[in-house]
Image (cartoon, rainbow, N blue to C red; front, side, top):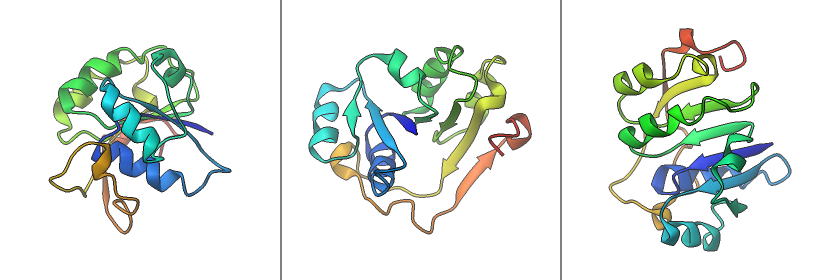
Length: 150
């Protein structure tokens, strides 16, 4: 299964590290606008590959939005044409603005979530392979997500 992670800092990088423990199950494709973060993510083995082509990310089975709230709102609008089996999960810190910005065309494929974890550090070098272990993930507006996502 191809998993696209948009944003390769602490949250996205840590998820990539955790998923890399299952190389036969997941192929992790990273996307980050910061070229230094792209290089660091590859060097630190946070992802299997970096894509600079957003269309490749849109073909993934799962897309993780591990970027700031305003960037999520901008990015989610560009995901209206993802494949019908794609699940999009946002890791944004505040949900109201994000939930209101999700296009109706993809609403049933979006899970708005907030991992209750983190540190004060940032960037790919802050990634921790067990950041999500034994942590709570708050899922919001689940009634608006489709059956496949619940």
